[in-house]
Amino acid sequence: MGGYNPFSLEGKTILVTGASSGIGKATAIEASKLGATVIITARDTQRLQETFDALDGHDREHKQIIADLLDEVQMKNLIDQIPVIDGLVLCAGKGLTLPMQFATREKLDDIFNINFFAPFELLRSLYKKKRLQKQASVVLLASLGGTQIFSGGNGIYGASKSALNTVMKFCAKEFAARKVRVNSICPGMVDTPLIHRGTVSDEQLLEDQKRYPLGRYGQPEDIAYAAIYLLSDASSWVTGQDMVLDGGVSIK
Image (tube, rainbow, N blue to C red):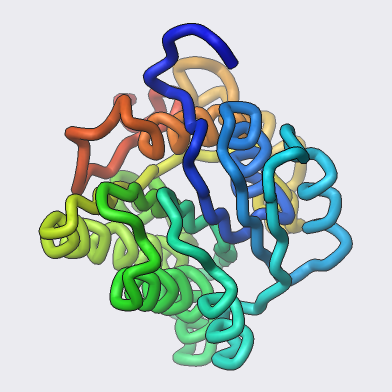
């Protein structure tokens, strides 16, 4: 790459989950452009291949691993294939809009399994098995929902992301013994397939964007660049923080 760049990821191996679309895909691609060797994982073979093909620097040993993090055997298989890594970005997640009075244990389990238990189990296992290099950096994708903003119908999703955000702080404190840093990103609405799942119309989404002081939702790259900062040596004194990226919506 040449020149001085404290945000470079050259020489670092980064694992990105949920890399088949949205923020995970953007993070994997942008990290590869900044010199990282990237390991990507997701459930969808075809879409993960599209991410893999878009990675920069195919002279590096990028790797793709199909895995459903909810499947114990596939999770173990993934962990077995992971070398010692310098960075981990936990992006896999699922949304749900449902008023609390209609919440069921089944719905709670579904969202918490994907948004909380699976990423935490992967993080815990990689740390325990010493697959996280000393001074490695972990980035968890939490949310503004459940941490800063409590909009109607968002309770189950928000609770799962709030739990993830809380566990981040405990891990940051405990993992500091090996100088492993753990932080989270709490985005506002980001224009990914997650928000186009039919719960609200495109007209409603356009109207909602007017609430944002900067006049738009985030793009996946907006979040990817923040993840790259947290993965890079530029943030070597940052741990236990939840970084809000929201176009200013939480200050209104």
